[in-house]
Amino acid sequence: MRAHLGDHLVIESPATGATRRDGEIVGLHHEDGTPPYDVRWSDTDEVTLVFPGPDAHVHHVEHEPPSTHQGPARPGTGEARSEAAAPPRTPNPGDIGRRLAAERRRQGLSREETASRARMSPDYLTYLEEQPADPTLATLVRLADALGTTAATLRGGGIDLPPGQGHALLHPQLRDLSPEECRAKLSTHGVGRIAVSAPDGRPAIVPVNYEIVDDEIVFRTAPGTVPAAAVGTEVAFEVDHVDETMSQGWSVLAVGPASAVTEPDAMRRLAQRAHTTPWAGGERDMWVSIRPTRLTGRRITPADEQAARGR
Image 1 (cartoon, one colour):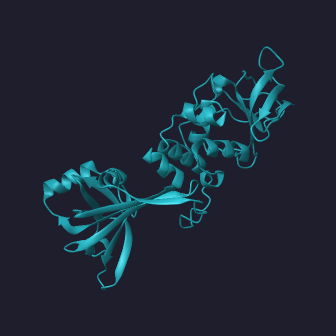
Image 2: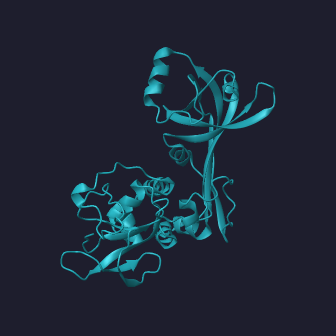
Image 3: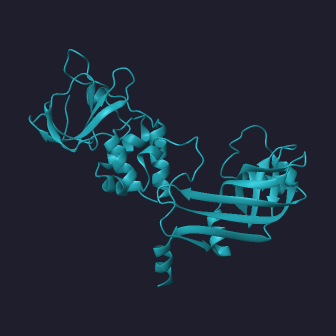
């Protein structure tokens, strides 16, 4: 096993391969990079002298591609697999890695910016995003703080709970959004909810993957489904976002007539411009278009933020 200053020492579970502890190598005791090492642990920020065991390996953050990953040392040899023998690994992120990358992109941050905020190497962040790692709680807390979220969110906690169960702001400010702000919130695509009268006559609200094309809201469905009942009627369509960490959020409501898109060329253009396929799966080749005649929205922000806007 050989390391350089700045590399990360990762200790994994022998049974699952998940990371149990990790830290930055901040001191070498041999010029050839062999153990022992001075390691600053990410969970305590303390530096200790470490003699790596068979459950440890070095992640070379500067001297090998981020996708390369050394296996644990072989018991009895005291040596990890050589760098030349370490096979390159294609990105295979776990749930935490996917959430990290998605939240970072949502915040418009690069890996370098995020790593700097979290006080870690950008290449180690690459490792966390691209491999099924299980970082320590302290590492997750630093990353969550850097991204303005929570460690529980990065771990997927609350995924089966409805949003908005956090505390309300002490001094909230509810303000109306302008039509331009509403259109910006709708963006180009996403997941929204359509309110219709179902085939049995009862009111229903269902989520759909939508696109914005030429200022119209379009989505794919299948004949006979609840969303398909929107055709030929006036419907309401709603999108929203809740920031649990900051206790803020917004919603946009569009009201207008819905119609089926039947012209073959128009259907082909919509399919080519679609950003995603319907999450529900199955054959959903029926396109429905909603032409908003009324577009309104509201946003909850801290009262002091509203005052700052008025200055």
